[in-house]
Image (cartoon, rainbow, N blue to C red; front, side, top):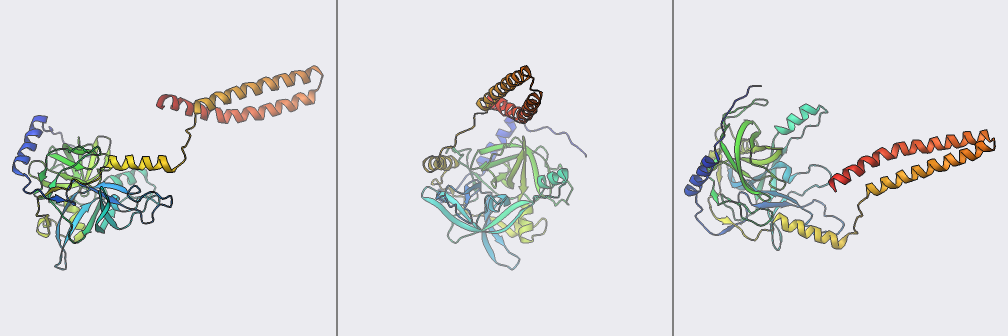
Length: 382
């Protein structure tokens, strides 16, 4: 595989780029927007939990990428939100979301739209390497048709899980429309360029792009966290939307390119994304009434504490010590029993005792190593 060495921008250069972006792209209005880049979203289960947990706490948490108006192939226009496919569809049977998308407000979840198009490529062919590569370069995007009257904005900002505003607002300018790549093809035409994200868990962070494939922009330094998924990735120099927060592999992150998501969702030819899609006109700041992920996590724990029986954690060290003591006691007992039998000339009894002792010893040989490992891990990890 070909490689290319590049020099990342220095911290001073990245700071200067961010300052330039913010000086040029300043918000122009002060009304609150509920659908906007970096804001939080929730999806609720198709079938509510039967344990009585409030649906606001039994929800999937993600972030918003970008919003605007799409010109469909039939000539109609519609307001949409774009996010990750894995945010709005089932990853497994444990949580199957409905097709409604919500924003978390202090008085409950408010519906903002309906899931429209989505793709989540998770190949399961049995070929471990092939499946990993397919997942790491596969499509992961979704579009949501917004309800009438939902307030939108092109201003990107974020509040992290602790309620702390992260970074200054940046007004986005358009979609980065890359030249298309074929499946299996890659390009380093973006290597060394800056990339920033806003997310509802970790807020604003920036890094450096490495390379791209059709459905992936790889980068380092952005440091996605759970709940940032679906959020906005943008160029801090010119405000262009680069992509959608998807996943990370250690220090390497992956964003779904925004242009490909729109092209595939609405049949847009390469190079024509910005002719068919326009970001929201408004530059309103975000609603300040959103619940944070930290608030929801605290409320969930409080509900569990009040409504479920506490689960006693196993003490593997105590179990291991008890099992060792039992093994030692059994060994002493069988030894004493065999000695007494031997003293009376009971050869058959000695043989029976030996057989029984052997069976018991085999049982300890199976349980003690497993408990020893669990005890050692518990000693280290607590």
